[in-house]
Amino acid sequence: MAAKEPFFHRGEAFIQDKIGVKAQMAHFAPRVITPELPEQHQRFYEQLAYLFVGHVDEQGNPWVSILYSQPGFIKATSCQQLNISADTTLGDPLSRSLKKGAHIGILGIDLASRRRNRLSGKINKLAAGSFDVTVDQAFGNCSKYIQSRSMRFTHNKALVPRVDSFTQLDIKTQQFIASADTFFVASHNLKGSKEKNEGVDVSHRGGVPGFIHVKDNTLTIPDYSGNQHFNTLGNFIEQPKAGLLFIDFNTHSVLMVTGSVNIIWNVENAERFLNAQRLWGFTLEKGMWLHNVLPMSWSFKSYSPFNKVLQESRNTNKDSVEKNYPKSARVHFTQSDIQEEWKDSKGTLLEFAENKGLTPKFGCRQGACGLCKVKLKSGKVRYDAQPNMALEEDDILICCAKPASTSVEVIL
Image (cartoon, rainbow, N blue to C red; front, side):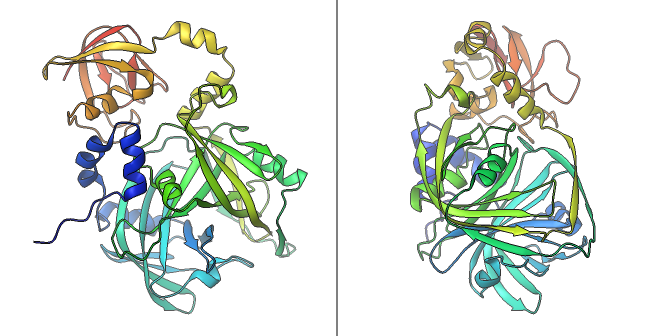
């Protein structure tokens, strides 16, 4: 019998092993990564008015593009196939990347509700103004770090689309990036292996304005706690390139850049990147402003609760943060009789439990669904962002709880 293909490729597995979650993720992956779209994900895509696409040009450069139309422009023709009917914008490299058999990554995201779903797949059919994508891997994402924004279509005939290409970031563009709270990143690990874990990925990144540090042609970007798939950074290990897309939410323009990347593992002395688990650097190779190409207007609603925590952390003296909460604690999962030392770098109690071989129930990993609720026997816990539900005094949500005392007993 043929060996089962791994869910994660070599680069992703390397990082998971480096931080000690490889076994945990191997157990976790079959529960969330699928070769098809569940019914609810099919309906989700069909409700969207915009979509982000990661793709790779003939020179191997990744790019992120945005496609849009009235809801219904995406149709799930089966659990393994999407039909997308939309034209590319003026100057978008996607127009040259759309080829039968080409790998692409897709991010379906509704910024207003903070809901998102990702997939990687291949183009299997092309027609005028549309293409079909067959799913290789698909999974849902939690809503961490997503700023809530509503969108409505607008039509201003006075706006004339224009493309400005460049190989240097001018001062205006540097300032725009430095003030951003949202962007999208494409990466890939294409090597011609034909395995399902080979492909293109596109992902959302968010933070408080200023979370990206800009110097000349180089960006330094924090990598915050996430789903531990390491799709983006794992791809960087295999192919150290990235494409970034920034929407100018105050105009109808889009900034697209592509370049080389490097991962910065040591963040101990990176004061400006408090709460980052690691950093990555991006160096521009080329880019373009697509002016007046989006017939949309956006209204900011609220920052992600997790981004509010990041802002509070940036505005708090680091010494006081370290004084208030322990960086290590003795954690006892009483039903499993597992006692181990927890460190802040190990993440939430859910992540810590999974790393110890336990398989607690969970759904959203953000304190919204309540599936991970367990009883706290002794000690105290804290939340980086307050859970979105009322809890009894001894109930905790381990998906987002961390020890707040040096000894914690959890009934698990």
